[in-house]
Length: 154
Image (cartoon, rainbow, N blue to C red):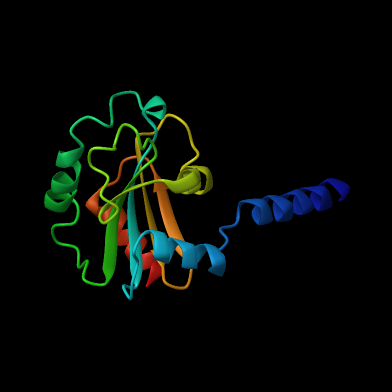
């Protein structure tokens, strides 16, 4: 009986530790300002990990990434209520494309440290709802992933 009680306590603590917590309001407001997120219901962040996390050069041909995602992932997803941006962890490698309108650096490694800190990945996707609820995926993603994440936040 003592072992069962200990197991339940461990499960409860583990569940609290790994539960997803909404983004605090002060951070949400900062994200809205920095990443020019207006009245759209969702902020969709297409994240590029640091070069050293990826097994290939994920900063090669950055101009093609948006077009590929638009043609193959977002092509039949209703993105009218979404602000879709591209955020790069390695601002030096992406400096030619960063325009602070669609392409941004990861200021103070906020996204890397809070959502994409698993090593040996090249990309990630984070979708944040206006109230701070979010869904994220570390690694490469497909159309079905985006649809499922948006559906989970509706």
